Image (cartoon, rainbow, N blue to C red; front, side, top):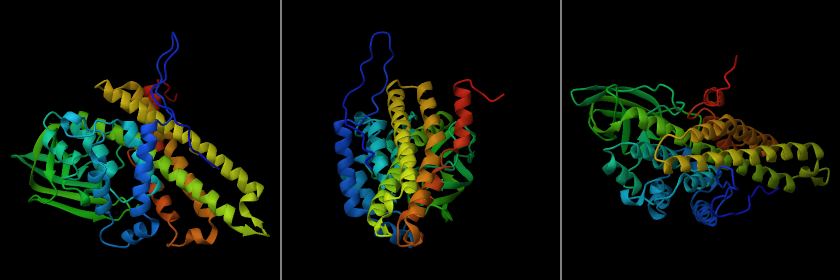
Length: 387
């Protein structure tokens, strides 16, 4: 059961009187990028290695991160060339996230190369820090709880006498970060070295073992103000939510593909289990959900790219992100649950990787806002609030 979309390059040309719509099919360049990332992950991110890392004190695979971020230059995809990056768009970053989701890779790509990077792109004085993230010399993390919805209030540190004080919990990938972007009560966003005096990062227990959370305690930590926190955090969380849908798409596609493959091989009553009509119906329904998720995720990535090109907050992008996240979480979780159930007894074992996908899907379903929060945001955006 294939879910591969045909390849198409270039934008869609509108007919007279029609507005231009983004091309949602993958370009040749995006497919080439996908192939390169998938080849690297196949060689360096097999399931056994990921499971082994979850049992260790070093869940992040920093050697894989170096190969992706430095060797392939993916850390700076969203950064313009004149600022030290690759000058690509959110569409290319979305393709990378699809493959990372498919491999449930334990690397801080979403948190550093997307969220922290996008926050710095909105800051006037973050050029030096941005260049260090784009070149993969440092890993960044936005010190805002992972569950925060775009546009929602977020906790801030207290700024006093040029130092930061406070405690921030639920920060994704903070224990792998070299620099933390901390919003403060004076309205500023500060770059704080993770190894600076007065900074303590403690890993928290989290469901997703491949994207650990941490508590950050600031006790008189020095920080460099890089810009205004409000616009930067709103932009970063919106981008994170929109591109998270591509990671969820990768999770769902892996779950569907591996389940189909397993049911073709597993036999019962001397016939493949996948031939049973009831299971065919479940897989067909799941395939339809995954196809719909692909459309929503691609639309969010394309809309974010168009909004970034317009150099401002874009209403279409906000709607596309809300639509994608209102749908993506439930599909990814459903796909992972079906994979677990339809793999039977083997799917319940620790040695099989399906539990990693279910945990990541569950964690992603509340990351950057729940589906309900995004539906409420969408209702406001399109003026269809509940009575």
